[in-house]
Amino acid sequence: MLVLSRQRDETIMIGDEIEISVVDIRGDKVRLGINAPTRIAVHRKEVYDAIKRENTDAARLGSTDLDTLAQTIKPGPARRGHRTTDLITTSAAAVLPATKVSPPAGLTNTKTTVSSSPKASSTKDTA
Image (tube, rainbow, N blue to C red):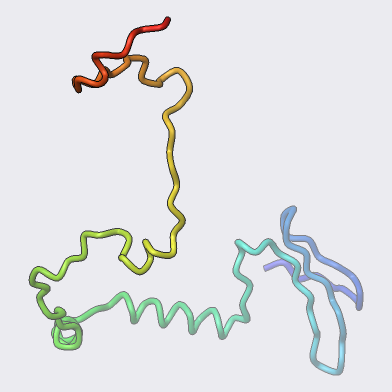
């Protein structure tokens, strides 16, 4: 263990990213300021030990725990033919504006349709 002496407002660096500063000294208590990246967890030792203990306990899952969990989580009611296939309901369709979509330029239909009615056949081509 490295033991360093520091006075108020003096700093200790750990690596390039962790900075520990002595903020205040009152009697037998020292207040430290710790500046570290957010990806590094900083806890008091008793909190760190409690987190480790809780994680270890959570990792030990017994068979009685699985039985209790199975009794707690029940499957929901079966769905029989109640699926909605329409993406837009009729009330939503009434609110949405009607939009006319035209084909992109260059993809327009160039064929001319000719009506087979007698009136159309009697007209002359004036082109």
